[in-house]
Image (tube, rainbow, N blue to C red; front, side, top):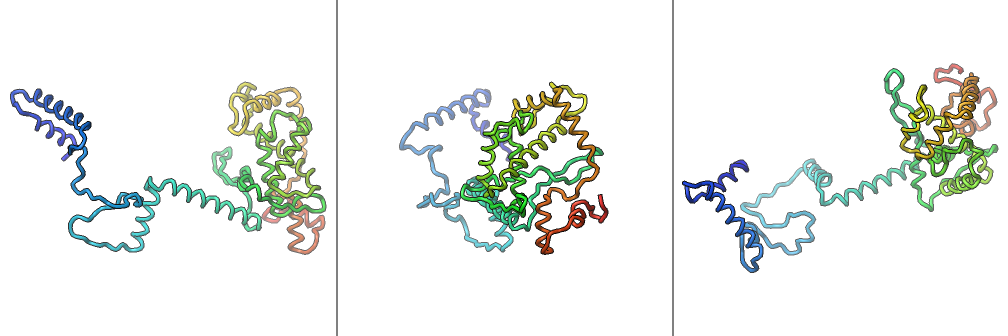
Length: 345
């Protein structure tokens, strides 16, 4: 029977005088509500509100049960043995859909994610997994293609205080091997943080020396750096900081837009005051002059390398490990300026 029909049957039971059904229903409904209200204040009297259920069972130590499954069986007892598949499905359903164990479920998921992150970091350090972050981007024709996005270096950021990555350098004071790649990715993520590398400075040399000292100390909290690599770290931060500002300009500044239009929309990872000063510099005479000089210098480069994000120092070390000697100039040029089909750039 539907709920509305049950409710109508209840109202019909209130009728005592068929000549006045509406009045009988009103009186009966009010009388029942009054009795229910008064029964809430009666102590030691069994009412419909405090009466135990028909099949109520008093279970000792009921608090030890995680679910409300305690009680006695009604009728004939029949045992059912589930097969392994049905038992696994039942367990999976309880683990994924029951709110009582949601806290344990979140704790288990968090522990599993941390374990996967540490395993991923170990694979990266051992060299069995490339440290890259990929995303889908649409080209001018609207076609999606897989491109290499910005490296977040989340595993490095989440290292404990007692964990550090040891970095080795070659004779030119350049980081090498997998730890060098992790360091380079981490420096890129540092250069994109406004609280560490502010964007409102026009040039790297204009930045306060205290900023650079703090940056070097911050990097040393995650990596064990040889003293001779400190200059390389600051130069790499300088390059990545300028590349980040250039990417912001390419992504958010369009031809024909005014300074107010560009400054109105701030990227999500940039501070508003730094963004306004950066946009103002782009539209200033000095900023446009330096932009024209950089665009002309970029256009004058006719030969581009094909080594991707891997540095020349790492390529030399990998060649030495495979062949037991240093590559000569011709071999190294072929390694860094050859397409996949074997043709030169």
